[in-house]
Length: 355
Image (spheres, rainbow, N blue to C red):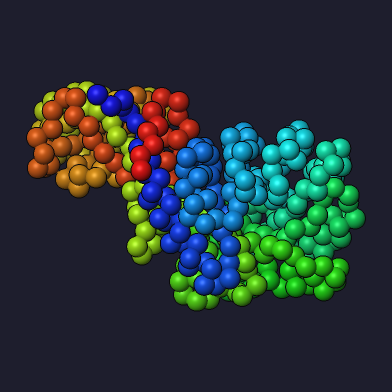
């Protein structure tokens, strides 16, 4: 009997989604960095991205880049580097996103020691208020990077939607292009990468409004879940089910939908609110909030609804389903980004690679 709960991963669907997006980007002279962080850089899934045509692999954690060290493809560190990891970053990442000059100086020192040239993408904050130097600091920061040994100013980039929810558009990405052109003219250099963000920038390509000098996007969710992330729309032709949660029913009982007694706090310090739907056929699955947020999973059986979850149990309503569920049966769920991140990270979830 298959192990539950498990995360099933369909690498051929990942490969298909990757090629679909890579081909679309190529039509716009844009190259893709395949982001591996949401599935913890499982090598088999990274291979599917490589086979699909990404030019780079990218991850936020050095620990994940170490898993990818034998992949013959340039690797990016996406999260701003910690100075305490500078040696490891130079060893396992070819390129890193940066905004702090002191950290870049540390990377320079370690690169010189290792007889390497580490490539720097200077991040510019265009208003989302996560990482990046403010726009008026780009020139002076770039000038200092260019002076350093052991590092090379490889390009500039920005991040949008991840924190502030700012949507990429022609104005903010146009500003990134202006900064790139000013840098190239002032310092007589050629930036190899102008990275216009992540999967949230795909909507601009669909609308044919992407500024022409943008030549890189960092794609994660769009590849693994088939959705752009500005508005959450499915990508036409993409697989939305390359990753699925499978959990086992451990109890199946008819019960009320309103708890009996005084309602206090739940296990997470919240006071729950319930809707009275009468007596319903309730299944309990052996997976919980320690593994996944129930708000981020979608039952494949559309007649199932989710009541809620505790640390180790997921309660679902199977009353209206056409399937006669029994204890021991499996229930499948498609995933949103946060769910995949939690499931891939949880040591209690078995990972099963499928084709």
